[in-house]
Image (tube, rainbow, N blue to C red):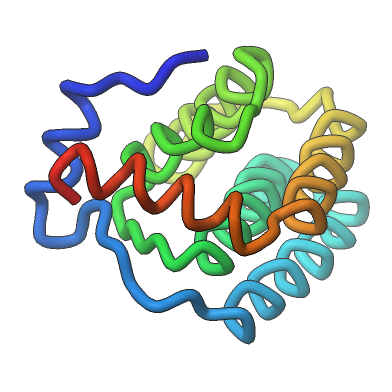
Length: 152
């Protein structure tokens, strides 16, 4: 999946949008720990909380990658737009977008949605851990340069 330049440009202009910061290894580790703990809750909770915790488990796992690279984004849609930088497949991006949509539906509109893909939640977090483990200083610098060259 390619980066959407128009969406990224908008995200970079927002106060809480995409910003380059110093890499935060301790926060990266904390976000992944939070993702693991939240994942445990996915398997024991029911109803809307299953959808909500599944989304945040995945979101925090991905955000741990961003923290290791020194990329901050407080707008979830903008955060998700960064996934192609890390070679996530279209399926992964669409999966997280769908989970976000479902989380909003159950949390704010009280819709009844069943989470039927706990396996994919676990797989998504595992994939984030693999990406995190493979991030070396050269890869991080290349990713940061791509964002800088686009006005970040």
